[in-house]
Length: 138
Image (cartoon, rainbow, N blue to C red; front, side, top):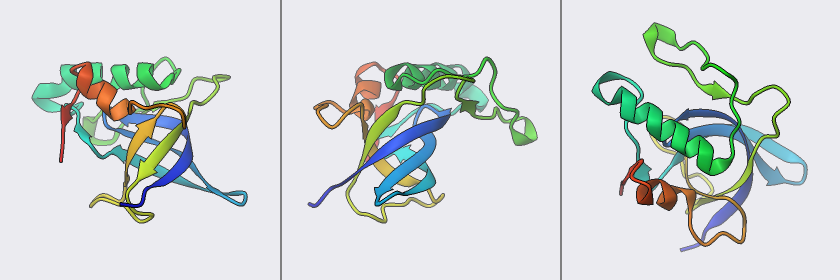
């Protein structure tokens, strides 16, 4: 299987398995995109799993070094909004690996595996599972 790797500058964290940022496509081209960690499923930030979902989201921010603003953005219909980067904070730059250059899921998010750097052997996805913040998802 051929894998595709891109640099991702993270600007938002939605929940424990979805982030957004700018993907560097090379040749001075970049695109803003939501990325769904393809190998995991984290608890939702609403409903009966809201507390676990918030804990999972905070764990992901810690793993990627995301320094967020003091409060979430306000979401629509009472759903919590995203965490955004704190003023003056340096956005984390990660590696996102996909199995196909057009690896999107039904909501238009890129399906990918995140790594802290090109030299990382353990993915952030696996670290979320190992920490008990998410479960493996086929």
